[in-house]
Length: 351
Image (tube, rainbow, N blue to C red; front, side, top):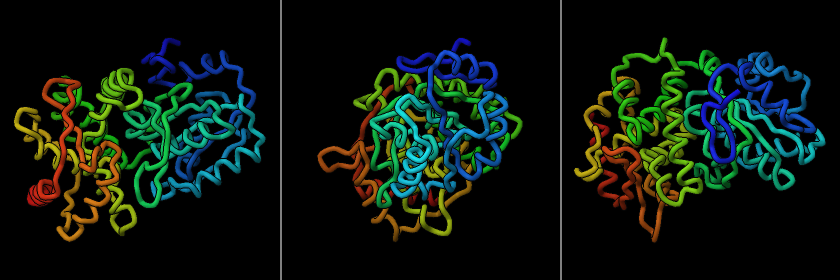
């Protein structure tokens, strides 16, 4: 039952749940189990999860609506109420079965319920497997600002089972693949060389992609668990990407997280100093290959800029973006001015 990755405070297992979960849970002394799902994961992922864990289908839990727009305080109140109704004590285990929204919000609720109960992440999307489930960053959105309220708290374990990827529509795979692209640029040239050769995402051996992608995230968060320095490199593409995601969330054409980050990476790479030596041409090619183009009207740029001013990397009133280097695990923090931001989006729109 050796973990695939052994972090300082918790293990990450990659593979069939049956190979890891039963033995792991036998060594724990939890008083109760509480399952958090959304309407999609309860329908598509619950039975494979139960088959792989041997847990009782009658365990208490809560099912919430699916989607980023429900990652808010009102839904947290629903989750906390269900926890109280189930009579959870502080020796209970909360199981987050879902994508990034479930992992973020379920972990946030577990970490704050009665000053904290253990939780595990069982990610069901490519995005959450490669990025959101590891690292202990938990948050909800507040007044239109993504991940504005949250905390750092590590899970008791993470169980990454690629079988759940078979339940995903193509757009969800593309969204998660945006984070794989980011990890490859940040820290794994061999992974980059592999993914730039892909021309489709169906039929991919995801274990061969997941392990090196997760390894990049693990290395960064182990070195900088509280985002005091290097960990900011994981935000490559996110300064602009999060603003785009937040803006379009409540429109008729919302952007998936990975789609927004893909645009953000292109724009931020355009603004990178030449010494950063980013693979801009290859990045443009792979984003154009997998992601639909979105023309961003110049009229919305002031609102996007306002959203970027809430970014957690900002300092002394300056909007900052995080850039990797050609050398793995190297961070540049760069102040951004509105005119450069406008120029980068206009360059993207003309691609």
